[in-house]
Amino acid sequence: MNTLDAKMGSAQQRTSSKTRLAIAILPLMALVPVALMGPNTLLALYACVALPIGILLLWRPEEPPILLFLFIYQWIQTTIGTFYSNLLGQQVDRLADHPGRHEEAIALLISGLIVLAAAMRIAAGRARPDLAHRIREMVGNYPTRTWVTIYIVTWLFSFACSTVATFSGGLVQIFLIFAEVKWAAFLLLTASAFGVTQRSKLPWIIAFSVELAMGIGGFFADFSSIFFYSFIGIALAGSDLLKRNKLLIGVGVVMMLTIAVVWTAVKRDYRAFINAGTREQVVVVDYQDRMADLAARIASLDAAAMTDGADKMIKRLSYFEFFGVVLQRNAMGQPHSGGEIWGWGAISTFMPRILFPDKPVADDTALLIRYTGLNQPAWRTGTSISLGYITEAFIDFGRYGMFAAIAALGLLIGMIHRWLLRQKGWRLLIGSGLVPVALMPAHLLEISAVKLLPALALSSLASWIVLNFLAPKLLRSVGVINRRARAARLG
Image (cartoon, rainbow, N blue to C red; front, side):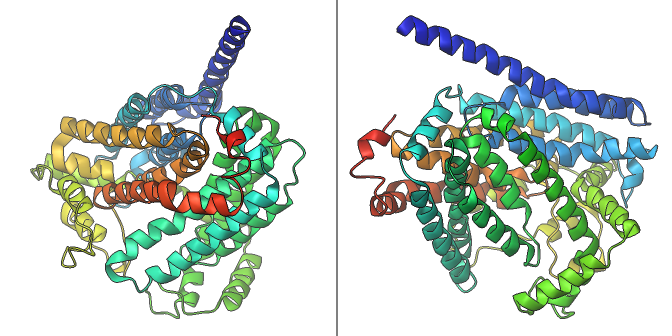
């Protein structure tokens, strides 16, 4: 039996290696021709080299693909402007509104992401080849109604946390972090719906629709989260599910991109309506009126408006311009700060506002103005615009020292990943749902280190509290920990 298991494990490993290689190479078939067709060839080819490196380092088919997601999303933010410029037949500098050393900025960003991927891989350790099987078995031990109940309870808990956060003073960040716990339950519901044969997907469809509707109705229209967590949830129960649900995932990607383009086309006027012209990031119009106004604006869109929306979306997603401006100012004599930004991010992690009420508020826009010399009137209306943690690493430590800071961040992310996926029994199940939620703050290239480091610390603390206090009570109440607990203890 041991010999047979060893042979099966070896075969699975060979299949996984072939799949990983295919996933790493296939995107290049589309990207390399674009890289060769425009004036940014060398930069685009470097981007093409970085993508398979990141995939080969972080593709872990039996685990939630959060590490790969962190890399790919930021790779897109870094390189989409280069490929888009090639399609337009223009230098990438022309996408920027301000002069700077933009090509150098993109090259440094790509290099930083490679370092980040390598560090995450090192700290995460070896992948668990049996994790997806265990997840499928554990969610399959209980009916769909169990996971629906867990999702509804956590959804209500998250809604309460979001509500309390608005008037919680120094505890606002803690409540907002706990408000994200619902996504862990949504991931388990997704794994149950897609990972167990012949289970109804109707409860999942309802949950997806509710989250999408609520996301679209806000000031920032956070519709992307439901798509991200859906893709991760399907992969949570094994990479083979991605193959079996290719059509669904393809439809989801097209739907997400379409909504993103439409939102970009209408959001300026829509936001002016829902904040009643105050130019603040607030909502003063009820949900029904917001939806009516949004529907009317969408109905009025034509091909030209959609094309303009796609152009703006690509330019908004691309995030290299401020780094290019900083590089130019550095070349003109602006010194490095010696760790001021990242240092404050690390220190503020251990200074919760509830204990340090006088702690300065992190002002991303003020940092951007200080280190770029740019200052636009629109930035003074409550808008938060960041330099991005890699740009801040350069400001702090220079062209070479920045990579040490990025590597340290990657090691931290990898250790959090490893901790949550090295749990036992039902804790492994909860840890698998929590790990994408805990690490999601790190998926944006533009997030400031002053916010990212405390966010990772708080999300880790919240995960520990959920694992040790909240989850046991909830799982006992729905019967996961008691009469069938031994059947679910697969660790």
